[in-house]
Length: 395
Length: 78
Image (tube, rainbow over all chains, first blue to last red; front, side):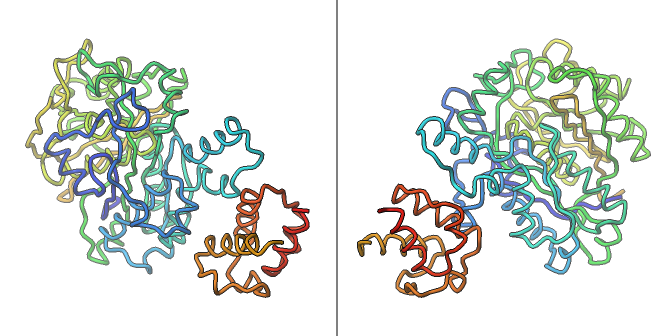
């Protein structure tokens, strides 16, 4: 199994992972009406000062999506107690769904609105989708394989899976992996608005009166290590990544398939050599859209059969918002912490169960319960599904 | 070129490289100031924006010292 030895997170809930999980475990949300878009609620990071983390020279090359990745990565490395020696051959895989939208949109504004003739020379190195993984490598001195992966809302889960596969293959002993996104730009908010899936209310996953997703921003990064490497250096093992399941719906660009999602959950169980009855908790994809939540519920029934009724299923997006390419990592951190503390974070803003939503969604209040194994679901536009299965450090 | 414009160019270089402008003389090779090729095109961009000129690629490539930048800019302003 792959040991998880460090976590880092910057989100609307908190600028660090311990603040993030502490609020989740108490059912405290961060969705507000503040921010640039104005019209739609969002989970906005409002108290972050990049200048306290980076020099001006560094900031010139950092789009917010890179800034978030490096801050979370730095915290995860410190949390794991890794030194520069450990990072010489470490991997870094950073997921992103949106990449450098702030940089791109500022550039387009200059060209198309201000009719300027030239754009800043750092536009490409700052805004390219791989910029976050480049800066993670450069600023944290990670010298093994580093790259970005992108699969919309599954990006971070796919990134963690890719990192784990590299460790299994012996390519690296240590990997920093997760995801980052900074989607609060005018153009991108308008693009989400055009899909008519943004809630004007709040995020109410699985609830009857749910009205869509609420965007969030930030980054989540975890440190993965081969169990041998972690134990050899006496690292504090928070839990294990015991299984990975990936599948593709191969059907529609936006409509999810229950069969495809179930296939990924079953693949994770198979990979971990576990039975569906071994799972106690599912950190759901749970976006709060009409279609996702009913389809995900159906997928859980398909994958878990009668055991579905015994599962606790919650969506922490109700608290940190849908952070897109970062979501899978933030939710992985939430899942690891739920196992570690035996506190299941709730689905907040829940009123009553929606049609075809008939599971225990841990409504509004956290639940104390021993968790042996838990899965974190990430499903994306295009039907790209990634499921991570985590185990307690007592297994 | 007016002294004010010379100073403006020196200030752009100093700000970009986070140096005290008093450390920069006309003869200083840009390499000594730690100016990389990416810095050079960024400084050129800042000068273009400040003085509303366009510095052609071939002229950027032949710049070695601070004075080269000032002379190149001066020609383009005329």
